[in-house]
Amino acid sequence: MRRESARGSRRAFLKTSAAAATLIATRGLAHAQGSDRIRVGLIGCGSRGTGAAANCAEAAQGIEIHALGDVFAERVQAARQNLEFLGEALQAPDERCFTGFDAFQKVLACDVDLVILTTPPHFRPQHLRAAIEAGKHVFMEKPVAVDPAGVRSVIASSQMAAEKGLAIVAGTQRRHEASYLEAMKRIHDGAIGEIVGGDCHWNQGGLWVVQRQPEWSDMEWQLRNWLYFTWASGDHIVEQHVHNIDVMNWALRATPLRAVGMGGRQVRTGPEYGHIFDHFAIEFEYPGGVWITSTCRQIDNCAGNVSENLVGTRGRSDPSGSISGESPWRYEGQSPNPYTQEHVDLIASIRAGTPLNEGKTIADSTLTAIMGRMSAYTGKEVTWEQALASRLDLTPPHYELKELPVTEVAMPGRTELI
Image (cartoon, rainbow, N blue to C red):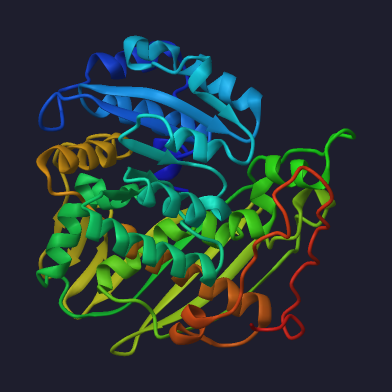
């Protein structure tokens, strides 16, 4: 597995306070314009949220982590402790630390300018809408929904943000990575000719799993072990592989016409793995007869591959930074940390009064991954129009820490396409 294994998982927080201190010491070298204070609220205090807050504070001068919120109190406290190295940039006293399902509303009610949305993906559409209605700029992790109903909500909220002059930047860091940006510029300028096909992959070993404790309700366990429940994560094709799928949409400047896929649950069959699949293979057809093969797997002791590849009439490209064929090229420039750069770009756009809005783009890529999952779960071909108009809504019947039965594993040929 390349690139991600070398650079580290996006979920991994800064490993040591010394490393974090080094990052903070360099704050301002790639600074956003201006030094006026921006108060930041963090909604979702797991490792990804804590890491995103650190990246944001590193991105520019004048950033203040002002309020924290999560369903679980210990996560809020852990986030505050892990962010102490920020020094004066951390200003989140007890009265601005909130817990419970309504914690996001309490963070938004604080005097914050920007919110970071890093809860499990199911909550993203609800939290985004609330943030935009409250007049806040947003950084939100990918994916931004787990079902078509959520995607439609995100698209509507993104339009509202545009009308209100609010920024939305998504956690698709490849779109802020120098090597990808330069490669994609060359691809769009014709360096590999007309794109005729390609492939993308995220094949790796297993990830974390949280064993159920006797005192936990169904909902509490599913929230703590959220990766393994489609209503919470979207399944790993949506939660993780969306990165690679997004690169394909970016390169082709289009969304697929249709998807035909398969997948299953071959190795991760125990109840601790909820009901999601452990492997997928999808064929996406794009306009112009371009076919993209997409695979993702989370099974130990198998070959790893995290990559994107494009084939054109004049050459080929690994859009992370190389081209072969008639116009060979390899990226040799500087490589700022893309996890920080996305916040640099967000903050710069806010301070310049030209807010970035990536909401529709990441909504489209999220729906692309969802339509692949829908096809694999049902065994049916799924068109873009079907996916966008689908009645599928995975919202649980309640947001309380009580009984919530686990949905059965999808069975192609039997699971209904809604």
